[in-house]
Image (cartoon, rainbow, N blue to C red; front, side, top):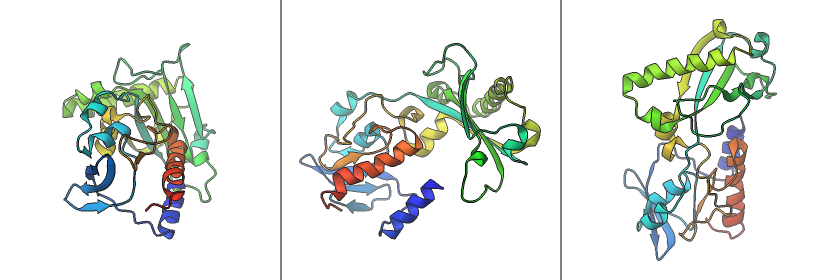
Length: 259
């Protein structure tokens, strides 16, 4: 819902949203951003560039190379496995009355890369139907998120990877049902993504969701007029990442009148 509002606003101001346009090379000259090349060869020039692909991921695309700078950067490691469950009724009818719950079933919460594929002892339970949208959602939905290890997921052969998703989804649910109602009889469809999924669709090293532990609060990079936004800049979470893009555009682009 929020993303749709932002996209509509962006387009109303003359912005062009291009999908399936992967960035290949970010070109600079004398330490200043000049243009970028898409994977297909098309070159796009601009006065400035704001990248949301991650700080290290952005610097790795730069030409001339910034290998020395990249080598000194900290790489993010925190990632997740998330399972989505479509239901044949509202979560509230099953005893799930909150929009979001952060839980831990042990005395000590471990915010770290798990020693197993995922850590089922803590997680985030989300029921978007309980959020007050302008229009009700078309189906019931519950999402369950757990800390996960990219290294362990990435090492699995394809068949073992598929089986592991089912196995650890079941383990996460069984732990959840020690203190929440069992909703499995109401599930009409389920799917799970892992750190490998995040890496595939975002390019973030280690499938890192919150980026590098070292943040660039002002969004600057070693290349003039090349800026970053998102979790590597410093704001966290969905709302934080959104505010980061707005803040960096206001700070570095709109105030200077660049395009």
